[in-house]
Length: 75
Image (cartoon, rainbow, N blue to C red; front, side):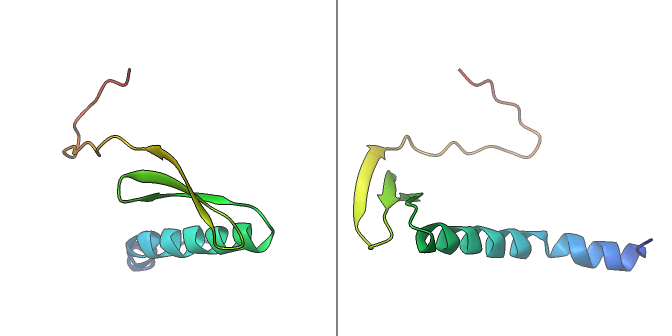
């Protein structure tokens, strides 16, 4: 199947929306199956359990801002 340029642009423009929906679905599916999930909230890594309880796992370092095309070396 060959897509037109217009169709391809339309789909590419919606990748962020599709990714957001997929992450939300995975989050709720994990909780529904009895698993816990990890989220970042206010600079903390928090584990959320299916019963709604939360446990702070660790403090997170501040985010690093980068420019498009900038390269960083990881330790």
